[in-house]
Length: 266
Length: 291
Image 1: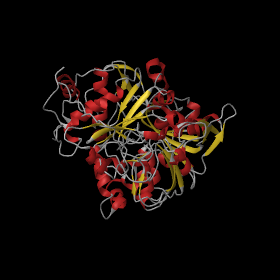
Image 2 (image 1 turned 90 degrees about the vertical axis):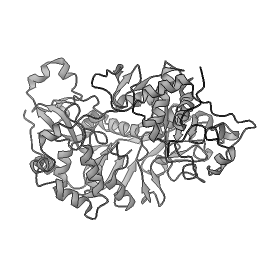
Image 3 (image 1 turned 60 degrees about the vertical axis):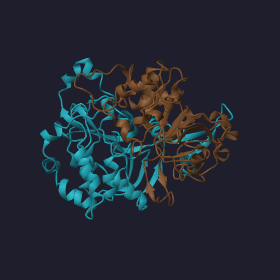
């Protein structure tokens, strides 16, 4: 396995994000958006062939579909029906790991997909709504992907609307423990983080090549726990790059991070 | 029994202030012709329960809505629904914002005659703090607290399907029936528009009957409207109309707004609407989306 020297930041993020699914066993991997979906696909094709995945419509697949339009004669590797109502049977069983991209993530790992600014009755900016975030966050492990790491996403204070439960003692439901909440990786265009710091503080896990811990802190609206030694995010291998290229034949990954920078920015 | 009726007859059964469920999901298999019939009516003060798309946006824009019960309102490929945003950002509507799965539980509770279904979904989030009507309760069996998701009882549901017979046997031939079976069961009256009216014998083939997701006793009225889901999709018959949705979204940025959209497309009848969007053949020719 040869590490590549020429790769994009998107490809680095896909490989880093695929780590979230590597040790999950037989669960449904749901990656919403091109990079999370390719991350789940890569994991299913390499580190964790036991993963389950849907076609993002209504069928479970035994092989992930390539992203984007496919030829007329393409035959998806369908293995079962998996319509939306059945997704909830899976979600509530806990046999799932989702990776999504909320608009805000606060210091507790709470996220917001719904409303920004103003009041709840009259928000300044109305977004999607809570979607499935409340149920996902209390039912199974979740990871986040953030293509633009800045203090608007990782903001000071608490989310304007809390769509998903996090490590906030003030909101902890009776009979639950903070350790029941299971937020895994936070992959951004600068680094990989998790909530493994003291008292579930956000913690730097690895830095993308050319990015400093100070840059991460500057772009995060709350304190990031930085362990003594922070490794570099591992470069993709040639094998991983070729799988990613096959899963994304139209190169949609090139349009997911602003200006599609190279993976190594040093 | 012949349950056939017209869209106008459906609207005549509805009343101001009713709670109306709308089937489909985002831009997919929405009963848009029935929604357009409401747009042309005097109905108002509706509470809409929906996995929302342009159905919710249009009804909000037309001033028909008092309250929206939702987990999202989105056109999927265009994430944000422009007229729902305007309604929220101008405080024109009340909301009950819940999780996607909570909506399913609320519909099930209504269908089963239960006051609520317990769930942990919503705990620790603003779903609970922003909805004083959703109670958190003790369990008789453990020491945890649980969300009591209340029944979402519907006065009426509006659903679009691929095929139906005149007795109300409804077939959804696309890959997902979404929560439409629960919308049908949760409502006092369920009105179903269909792309194709078929003879009962059509369902004698078990492969066709397998795609029927609720009993005909849950169907009140059948409204044959070929192309009636446009601009949403009715897989496998046709996809959603991307250029039309783009024009709809663009209208929200123009001075004439939704009135301008209606002026251009709505028409005085579904026949006029279909002429304005290029005709039924053009609708049926819209490619299915790739996910």
